[in-house]
Length: 188
Ligand code: PAN
Ligand code: ZN
Image 1: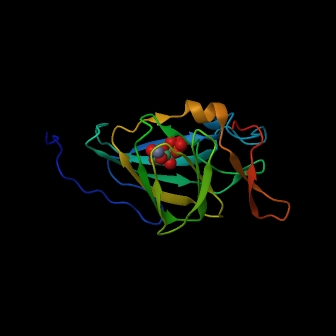
Image 2 (image 1 turned 180 degrees about the horizontal axis):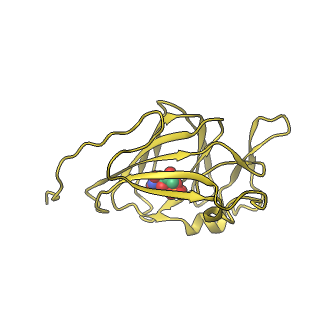
């Protein structure tokens, strides 16, 4: 069956990551990520950590969701600003990330405890296979912006990550440089 979609074009600002016109904009603030960071007690609850611009597309297997994410620079305690991270609710659905601006990391993890760390930078293209949870982290002094495209009905399972976390955390080391550290509490 041919889906009932009309062709369209949108403008992405490659420097800021913003998508113009009818994108659905969602902000994630410190308060929305309570429990994800080791210690957010010193951070103002209203501070925006990241913003997602999503082009409205039906959540169907035949479609492709298109969005950008912009993570503000900064840290909460020793941890760099990061997204919640999620598995896709339909575990086998994959995704592609294209770095637009800034410098960061894409942390990937499987349910059986494997993990990978990939760079995000302008022009980086990262493939997120089905079955891999994914979280992005801003390591720089500027906003980190990337474009994502994923299977329309992928859905987001946040609960598994909220409960178990990722196998690693990205923190600032004593020398001021980023450190990818094993998260001892993570299940194996
Ligand atoms: C991305 C993410 C976006 C925000 O579009 O949804 O970067 O991260 P969280 O959803 O983990 O808060 C994506 O991977 N979509 O599937
Ligand atoms: Zn995803």
